[in-house]
Length: 323
Image (cartoon, rainbow, N blue to C red; front, side, top):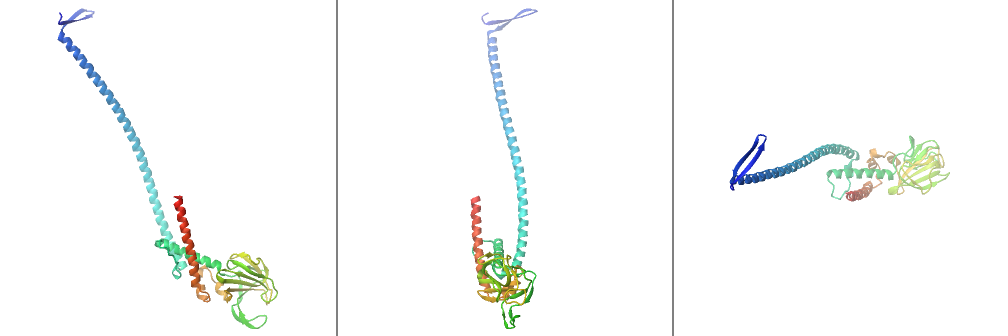
């Protein structure tokens, strides 16, 4: 009995005993231990696998979220790319329009007649054309603001021209140094260029009430036989500003305005200056030979070129600072 074990099982049907040898008992114990180990290993592996599944699932969620973010980024980049392509297309169209307009401006300005003296050497063809057009346009504006041009009175009849004539009062033949405009007393008289009032003199003899404006580059304009003044000595005036009212003062046969243009004191034919404007800018160079126009234009051109270069440098510095 020492090498046997008895297991007794009681039921409603009675009690029954089972006899096991000792090695059977050991086998059962070992089997139980092995079973427990196997079950523990399975549980451990299942737990480990479950954690791995959770980690993989979390990683998958992150990848999905990252994929969604990438997809959104791609869509945004695609939209920006379309916008950039549209901007480039618009810029190309704008450049084409500007180039066409620049051609028209160059034809209007006749840039070949007095090309700009730009010496920076940094401008490409298109930039150079723009700078030349800008300089030529600025030259025109500067000269037309500084030198008399246009009529001093509006819609007036020219009653006497520049040159020798018989004076209507003295009946003596003498040189007429200006133009006479037949206008009623009180007609507005306007400045034909920017300048400063050199003389505003009242008189009943000769030129009568007399006004002279000192302009740029040695030019002056004068107005005689006025009835009243709207400016006084030393006043700065702008082109188109009201200077006086016409009259019949001094040695005059009737109401009119006597208008003169002089260069360093020499009387010039005002008619060329009256007809001079931006639409026939080069005409004055051909009609009035007493002025060294080429030198004058080059001088103004160099000044404006220098100013534009300085402005370009300032713009570049401001752009660098803003970035």
